[in-house]
Length: 321
Ligand SMILES: O=C1O[C@H](COP(=O)(O)O)[C@@H](O)[C@H](O)[C@H]1O
Image 1: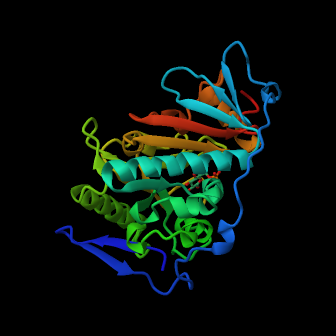
Image 2: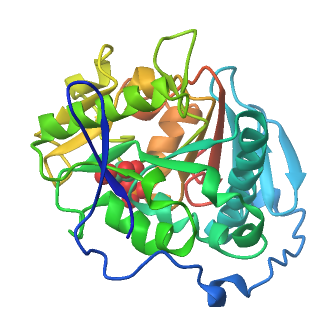
């Protein structure tokens, strides 16, 4: 079984009610997925082909990756030769943070996006991470979720379950899916109550600086329009500053009903990885990181955590920088 549905009563008692018999398979470690060794060949001196403005940026060559120094507050930007190289690096980055937080606080709180991000996590279910990561200490959340049944093709939970969660031994009770029996508003309230309960249990840290929950790591994707989570350009929800979890019923990207973490929660994170691949996202990346003259401000530009921000880009996504 893939997760617990968190439903909370008024006195905050947690009910980890098992899901109905879906998906029809149990959590298992796929031995076949463990077999591939990660053997990276060093492909240096290919940086010049990325076509970035040398006057503005400073580069460091490291294997098949170029590092770009950006203005303060925009985070550390890494550009990989390919999405495959990006995925290898993302796995190591995530596993290293898992080690650090498990040692420091005995738990690792990880927030996932839906969409293409999940595919980029595929190297985590291969050797050496399959065996070295302390999966039992992971607590998994979603930065946004579509309000559809968990077995629906649009469900971010289903996507993560099929591609990632079903392949690693994270205790099902540590996977916090939305209650899909509720309305969008009800599901957002329920998820926020769930987070508050987990803060009380010290499973999730609380940011002393902001009073919002402080997740150890958020793995955030970005749409071609510069949206992150379910926070879309021009939508009033991008300014929500009271709630932890908000609902939206008019998402410009289908499906319309969703819940989403708000920016104060996103920006209270200890670490954020912004993972963007493909030339279709190059314009939005350029607005966020380059010298684009665009006066539009995109939601991705509002990602500015108290902790560390790291961009993982492939060459396509960085092609307009
Ligand atoms: O609708 C959504 O879109 C974004 C971006 O998805 P991508 O496939 O273009 O990477 C995703 O991060 C978000 O979680 C999802 O609900």
